[in-house]
Length: 489
Image (cartoon, rainbow, N blue to C red; front, side):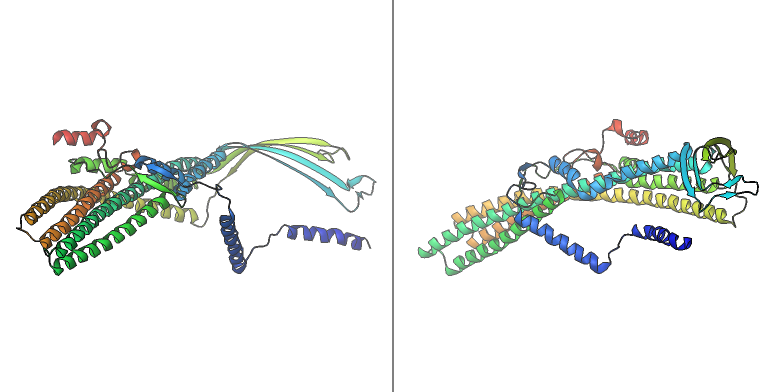
């Protein structure tokens, strides 16, 4: 019967661990939950009162403000910034391996009956209590030191990765901004051409009614108007697409009406290859990240070596118990103990040796990857310098071509008034001017993008300069080797 009375207690002990288990939804349940959440979001969006949520942005938008808005709103960049907390937590956890630890424990044990010896003395009391506190201090732990150094290096690596994200975001925003500016310019070119063509069509109709123009001249003018109308619609659609891409990048709410106040700059600057490469090798964030990875892996090698050393720690324990640990019956008593613990793995079946071989091979791989990245960066900078020079020559040629097209249209219009040229020739000259103007704006855009690409390849785009500023940093900020190279040239 006593055993039967203990059954409810044993059943409770068996059920309590199971009570903490949580239900894990399967894929079908997760799909249903996500569908419900999506429906709730749509419902809240449709039923939201006016003024609820972020108001659409309206007003002037300089490029610098657009970059700042993207850095503050972009979710991918904000997610990357949280890596700093991970690095800080990793460093804190690594440092605790070298700090003392204090632990406490306690317990109560109840036995079914009290036991006595033949002499009548109690040998086991029914209720027994115990409590203890232990202070432990590592004296020698080679792995803890390498872990702390690795955690510090990891924090530096995280900063370079964040800088990479910032560089890419700055580049994407500036490119999208200038693409939107370009779309406005192209739309203006096509709109002006359409307005001129419509005016010319009205003039041709009046001239035909007076018998001064043929039906072909009027039909040719109508075709020109139709062609420019199609080009205006295409340019308007391209502008809307460019603004949508910019607003999405800046996380602006729907309905935002931005006015881009910065134009596309054309800054002509002579950039030599040698200082550009030196700047890239010293400032590029991807090279810095690769370098930090090599250093991190070196600490992994040192950590593998540290496993061959013993671990030594000192401890002090204070214990209190009832019955007293030193005897004396059913009452509280205490005792303390102190000492030094040492552990040393003498043989582990070559596990440590295998870890060390892997760590050294991975360190060599990362060193080779860094060397390859440096060579790739040098080639990229060389290509970007050449691309920028080509873009500069193209922009100059298109600027000259635009002036030539304007002069050609003026001469043909003058010849038309004097009876030396035909209306068809005027239309051809006007279409050539429209094409030249569009090519000119595209060449300015291509030049600005080439400058940004060079800035990015040199590791400078995250430090503030935009395409309307010099690509190279002031001479005083260059490495000594770069300044020497400039002086030699």
